[in-house]
Length: 204
Image 1 (tube, helix red, strand yellow):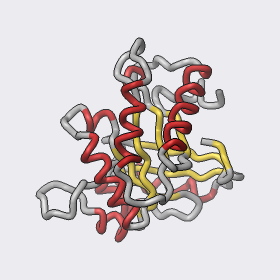
Image 2 (cartoon, one colour; image 1 turned 90 degrees about the vertical axis):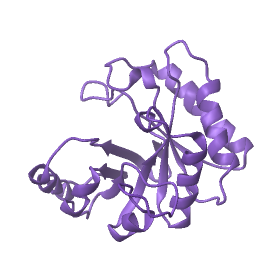
Image 3 (tube, one colour; image 1 turned 135 degrees about the horizontal axis):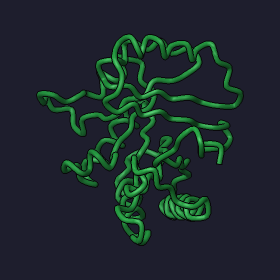
């Protein structure tokens, strides 16, 4: 994302890394990123290993309710760990049964507790139309109880981890559609792109 806050870069480490690795990541505090907000999202158990000064902490998921559920991560725990962003609705979570309703609940919880949600949306197949991710955007925003900051991450599922990437024209078209859909529902949302971003194509 590039806008009033400059660039926003979000790193989702998924299940990668260990304590030694994430302690070494703190070297990023020595790097001056002009007009750039860097968000690092390690596995939950390594959140305490990161000491943010010039970057922000993000979480990879959060429980969609305040219920006491074994194995889940409560929103108040993320606040306690100084988390500023949380990824919700990632395609890998949706693939194991997470619903649009649960994603909307997570967005409302994060906004209520002052954490910025990064909502993942995207089509499953290369030849899919835009209806799929537009419906995901509408589901979140039509149920939003707050006008707080919401960031969408356009991540076409067919591009995640496959090495395939949409054309810039296709990405920009999707981003414009997400923004216009949000505007129609009274929201001014920021949009990221994710999916097979690497050292060879990140500048583009």
